[in-house]
Image (cartoon, rainbow, N blue to C red; front, side):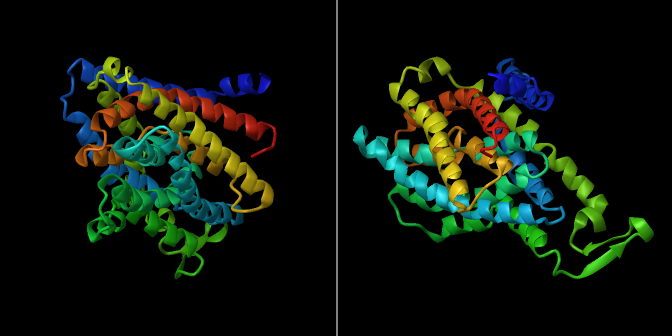
Length: 347
């Protein structure tokens, strides 16, 4: 109880939570009162996914490389692929109760959460230093599996070149890879010296935060939009759907419990096990980021797949709404849990 009270009284924690909830409620009010049109959520999402989040991903890598940061970053990248393989295997447990299209929908929506749109902005709010870096590296696996396994699961078709193009040409993936390569190989790139005397800095010419601060200032402004844009869009989206109808479906509650509580708990246990045996160990920031991303509502792309390929479209829409509302509470719960685990030295 003492640990929980300590976490809840932390000003940084309270600030991040208040910001998240208040801006989501602001988005809800703006749409519910018709101060913005029904097209506003899509417009904000387009700016978020094509501009703000790529800027955030790139900016995260404009930093000195440290032994711990490099090791944890690489482990986050590899663990992402391990994590999604585990999720795919565990999701077969739904077959005990569900069959056919319902099984595919339950599995797909459980495996693929809204890590980019919902998770990363929250992670960045809590861990502005290394949180975005680790989260974006972990999230590479998410996009690979979403546009390959996810497409196959919902469509029943084979993987095609169009999906490969979606993976490789996604603005967030491009920004992440460019930033990651600069960050990882900065010692091997041509070096320049800026300033003189005690204030002199020597490093890679592509460390744009040093060599082109005027450029990175613009990138920083765009990156700072990611969290408020995401939260406003979430609130506006919630205002357009009937929660009353969504909560009537019992399977929606089963899904939400599995997605927001059981799957994050399983992944947390896996990370603790891996850390204890020295396999892909993650630190507190990276592990918390993974748990937050596991506790996100279903990805928009996954819900779109379900609708487009007629895989329980109504259930998928209802599950997205209910899980989005509950995810706010679930993520607060998991952040408290991770803070407690960090306090006792587990992470």
